[in-house]
Length: 291
Image 1 (cartoon, one colour):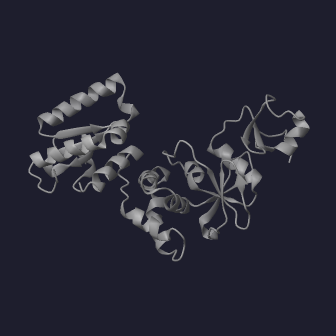
Image 2: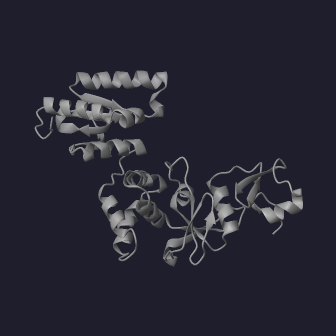
């Protein structure tokens, strides 16, 4: 391989022939320990995947890096790059090495057009790995939003898990699949939904179109006209705030109670949210809510 003929990853030992002993400020950026790319290369999921194929030929990508390559829109801000390499111990900062074997029918190849082929687990296997390794809430958030990878992976996941008796994490994934609702439109909407369920508020549904209006509520209890709406960053512009207020005032005039939550309020003041929603439900005759 000629390290000077492409923009792919370059090992330290090869780079020294081009730059001498100093490797910084010479037009290259370190991607992983022992691996570099040119400064003009955008370090995205593809670049990270190419680097791993350079470091570990024959290995297979899985986890969040693979999910991102498949188009998952809501990966964590930071995550380790998961690599499956049976019989090979991997210890490198930023890389999580696994030594189990992925069934051959769940390995496929992607071609970026600028590097060796990228071996990657199938989308449903990627979701299985994420679901069994991430904490419960994060795993359900990932599964709820997995339709951004296409509708088939999450649809194929139950059958895959059912057929893997004896595989570590199988029971965990089955339990988490029961809690999945792919109508959620963001991880924080999922967190809001789970927060309500964990407090025995089980009458809410997602993405409810209000009869007589062209409005859709994030989370609603239709019979009692109680709604909980999550406002993320897209609701902070002046225009969106004005549109939201008009919409919510019209719905309130039609008899709806609307509790607006944000990431900050869900983290800092969940008790207040819960008290407000419970009070609204009680005021509408629901007797299953404790004081």
